[in-house]
Structure formats: C-alpha cells, structure tokens
Figure (cartoon, rainbow, N blue to C red):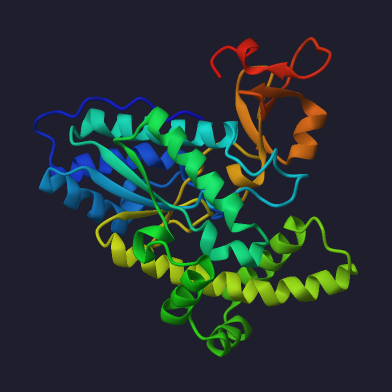
Length: 332
C-alpha cells in the first residue's frame, strides 16, 4: 500500500492549499471505524490542516508524531519472534515514501517521530525489557538503512535517561496517569471509554500465551491489567504532547474523522486494528502485502528467511519444499 505519488507544488500555491495537498496525501491511508458515505476531504480535519499549514507557512519540515512500534507481541501464534521483521521493514518504507511525497509539494519535507512506548507497558503486557531493548535497537538500524533524515525514535530514555525501567514506569505513572478511581468512574459512565476498556481486556486475553489457569481467571487478571494500560496510554499521550507541542499527532489505531489524532494504516490488514508488531507479513501471489497472525499466514504461505532469521511468508503459485530465503524473493 505505497503512498500515492505527489505532484510538484506550484510556486503560487498558498500555505493553506499546500497544507491541504499534504493532508490529501494522508487521506487514502486514514484508519477509522467511522462509516461515511463519501471519502473525507482535508477540510474534515481542521486541527491537522491548521498544524500542517503552520509548518508550511514557517517554511519548516512538517513534524508528525506516531506512538507505536513498542515491541513484538508475546504470543508466538501472532508473530515470528521478538525482533522487527519484514512487517516493520515495510512499515518504515511506507513512512519514508510518505515523507518523500510530501517533499515534492513542500520542499522542506516532513519528519516522523516514532514514539516507542514498549517499556512503559512491558510489565503489563508481559514482555521482558531486554526484548524491548533488542526490538528498539534493531528498529533503529532499519531506520538508518531507509531514512535516517526522515524517521527518528523517541522513548523513555529520551526523558528519563538510564534509570531502571521499573523506576521510569513508576515516575511516568505517578506524574501523568489519571487516578484509578477516576478512570473506573469514567468507564462506568462513558460508553467510549467502556468500549476501550473491554477492547483492551480482550486484546490482553488474546495476547497471553502461557497462562496456566482457567479462562475466567485469565479474563479477571486481564481486566485488572487493562486499567493500567489505559492509565499509561494516557500518560504517554501527555508526554508526547508535552515534548512535541507543535507536531501533528498520528495514531496506528482507528480515529474518528476530525478527531485530535489522525489514524493511519501502515500496511494492508484484514481489520482496522492489526499492527505490524502483532502480526506477520504475507506476500500474496500477486506481489501485494498484508498482515496476518503468524498461524494463519503459515497456512497460506511459506516461510522466508532473511539473514538467517524468519522474516515473512510468501504465497506461491507453485509450492516449494522447505523454507525459502529472501534472495529468491525479488524486491524484498
């Protein structure tokens, strides 16, 4: 799902019209659960249009923040391992191409700050901090390979240095997270927050692979963790806004049209919630890509290795025997 090729901006284009043209590049990739009768226009996103126009008027690169790329899911039925693979590689390639398209109509270009929140949630989602560090280190290498001048990584280390991760989590929670009683009251009275809480609970249940108790016990345990996930998610949103005040806020989750965040789809997937770090990449027989849980992708395609590690799956017209290597897959 590559970005569309952007036209060159006319010299006489106003900052607002250039801002609208930039926003128009994002619209084909808008991720939302809204049911609209017609595709939205840039004017349906007044906040994003104003922020982008401000960068254009100042002659500066448009800065986007994208919370995400935390770590791989701990469920081996979903992913190929704890390190970034072809799913992340394709996603970074997409973001790089999007910045390149923006540069064609706004020469200062664009920058995307990936706000990696893995350590903030590691204890709640049951992922070791060592795995999160390894994921982030590999992600930086992939970014350096594709677009070091356009993509950067922002995380807890940037604001709290080398403190122990438990200390970092506690400090962020104490300073930024809403009180638990306040959140519980909101869940009881606000339908959207209640739906979010239930969705996160289901997600935590689905992501848990090694629980030895009953299903009902797992659900109770995940309901407790879901409160913490929402608290820290809001805390991280406040931190990102505090450190990147002028940035246009992107989200890998579906967002309503005209909301404060612009939901963006990084890769094709069967639903609006699948992310590269909760799935494996499958290259279809026609050359297009999609994201699927590992177990499902393995039924549809053959495993491809890259540098000796599992990378993705490939759907073939003529089945082979055994795993293949990346060198036999043109363009990967």
